[in-house]
Length: 371
Image (cartoon, rainbow, N blue to C red; front, side, top):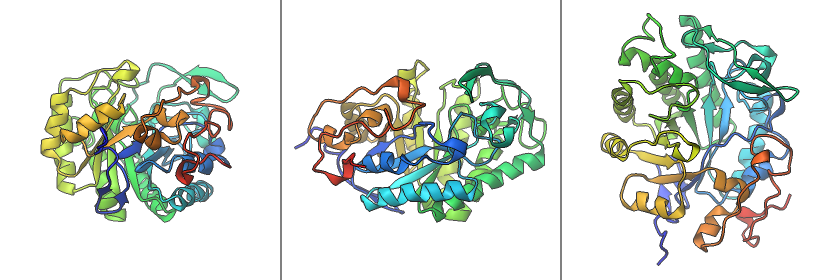
């Protein structure tokens, strides 16, 4: 009997069957010039199709929400066609793939947005920090323009349209990025949401943007094809802890349970130096939410198996281990050593540090790195 028997076991969902419970976490690799996934992206994702589920890197739903230099989008036909090539490659290797949809809000720089579009946010609260921009310049993030009600609703529609485009491109599902201090979480958080209309103030109002996105997306593509990523307590991207954080996320979780979405993906960040999600909170989510829970953040094969066996999660996501180990699932299966990736090429570069990491198990077509 394998010591990671459950991690390697299949999982049947309402939308698709996964051959194991290993998820490739969404990781921004920033090789998408003009927001279009690069010419080697289908190789990169195809090499990693041995994962039970791939969650592709966060992709902007609008030209003013790209945020990071060379991040991809899903708001025009050229981007959609490039993603289709990736999806087709993963499906040809019998894999499953989800697209994570994002609007970065106040995080980013206009020089990284299409047409130098200005940053937008719930309120005019500037984020601290610098952002890499074209020419390898590092510039301070400017203050965002506050969204009008009409602008807010247009970005809800942008998420819905992006979800439809993803499904049309062949993705098995979508994941709304409600984490890491980006636009959805900026609406949730009282530090960045200082509005006095029905999108600000109370927990119910601050949650409205997120829940209207989720309602629209589930209506457009089906609740069984809709997930969300959340990162409670992470204090990422200049969002401090706040008193109502637990109550806010409990309210969201209850609403998502009522909607019946496919999964909640909890992103834990202690390995990156941020506060951990308390185990008691994860247990509370498990009680409130009856569908799938994905846990991500600093996991090992052993911790993943423990969390699966204990019932805290149904799937476990791995990020950086997948960068340098395209055959990660088979390495887990055979207790093989893992390669440490080159951090200098995590967020920039060409094929080097992207598709040139070798697979040990080259007899398995699912993790071949042959171009």
